[in-house]
Every structure is written in C-alpha cells, then in structure tokens.
Image 1 (tube, one colour):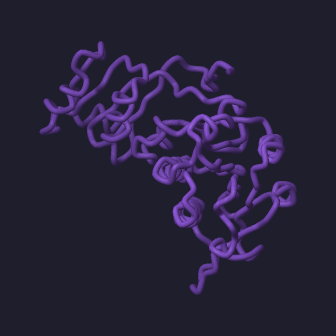
Image 2: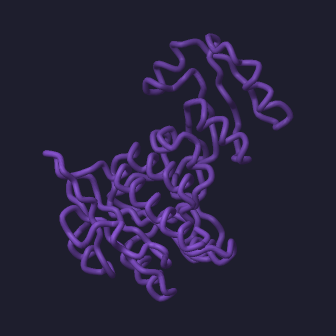
Length: 256
C-alpha cells in the first residue's frame, strides 16, 4: 500500500461551515484550531464535540468570519491539515476489501470546486468507492469543495492522477467497464446494465468529455431531456446516474 499524498504546499488550510467542520472533527482529521462565532447559540454543543480532542477553541466576531470566508460560513471555521489523497493503486483495492461491486467516478477536468464538492456528497451517499481527478485543469479538495460536500469530503477516497486515461486503462485491466456520460450520445442511462463493475466518467462544465477521453470509454450514456435547455449540471447528472446504478444493483441483489 502506498503512503497517502498531499498535493497542497501549505501545512494547514481553512475549512468553514457547520457540517464540514463537525465531520472533520468526527473523522479524526488533524485540526489545530476551531473558530466559533460569538453569535452562535449552539456554541456549547459544538464545544462538546471538540472536548478532549486537543483542539484549540477560539471565539470570534462576525467581522472575522465575513472578512475571511464567503457567505454561508455559518460562523464556524477550522484550521486543518490538508486532506490526504489516496494513491490510485489503493483506491482500486477498496471494492474487493468491502466485497462489493466496483463503482468509481472519474472527473474529466471539472473545474468548479462547488460542483466537485457536490459530486463528493453524491459519491458518499451513493456508495461510490472513490473519485479520480486530474492534477491539472481540475478542482481539488480546497475549502469551497469541502463546504459544498457538506462534510462528505472527509469520507470519500479521492485519487489525483496526471492523466485520467491512465486510470481508465488500469480500471479496464481489472474488468471495470468505463461508462462515459455525454449529452446526446449513446443510450439513456437506465437502458444500460449498470449492475456490472463500473467507472462513470463525467465531463467538464460546458464542454463535456474531451474527445480522446470519450473515445477511450467502453460505452456512452445520456440523460434524455424534454426541456429547452439541453444539458444538466455535472453534479446533477452524477446524482441521477449514481442512484440509477444503486437501483439496478439492488434489484439484482448486488452490493455497491
């Protein structure tokens, strides 16, 4: 097993928001300080979560939070060690360790950290074994992504690779079918057999899958739409397809 790696240069980073901070505490992430707004009425409840964990508690006013974090910070923030990424080899071993049918998400240059965070939330809810992202032209595990994940970023294994096509090849060698999601191409997602070992590839905002990535997929699926706007947000598409996979696997008695 390879040692988890950190791609960030700094030794600490900010996360903010109630769920991200609480889940970081509960998951055992290394945390140096938690900052709580003086206006929060549940300060004592939050402090009970922190109690006995060797984490410094600091109280701060609204100016502190509003000057450092976007709206929606909820008056709660923490200085944490950067999240460690999982080497691809270890990521691929997760399904077998759980005696489950493989299910991975591969993100092809999704650059919006909020989209990335929402996808991590879906991955956690949908039993996805891991998410693969490219090291360049892609959102990584920064504060915005962690906030959008509502704490799910603490529990989903994420692997960063230099080229997602290499990851796709490694998965194919393990018998995992590479399924590309692309508007207007392939067949509707629910017409495919999604109970097989799968890796679902999602394209970037506005551009979809790159041609070379699309050509490396074993099959393509789409989501038929009746509206005027002919595309969905990447995280919305991920949610629909991941839960269709869950539905089909449950119907066939397969673990996911």
